[in-house]
Amino acid sequence: MIAALSELVGHDCYPGLWCLAPWRRDGHPDHDAVGFAAEAVCQSYNLRLVRYLCAAWEWLQPEDLPWRRVRQFTLSDHVRARKNAAVSLPPAIPGREWVADRELFLV
Image (cartoon, rainbow, N blue to C red; front, top):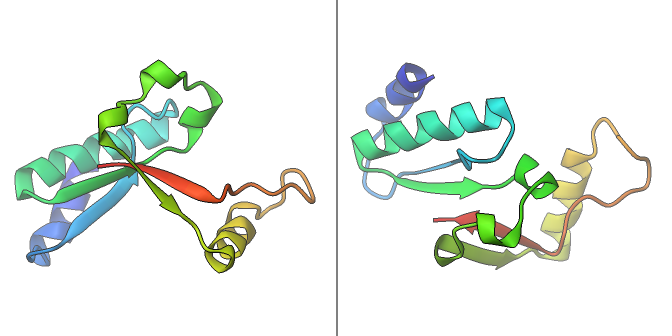
């Protein structure tokens, strides 16, 4: 995973490039592995890493999150509708809305 990510960013590493990846403590093995690899690559190439939470919402306690690194972004109705359509395929629970009106990222 680290080699694959390194190859991707190593060819196009330019000022302002950043990486969006799952938080390495997300709690799902696949998410944690990708988050760990992204962290290693971003440190090597001096890239900004922005992390998102996915499975962590199922187990997360408020004290588990590094709040000093959390940034909140409000989602427009249009973006929220598009994200809701994307994450509900295939529909796990028909009619349920999955996306909140804001998104949290770790920077």
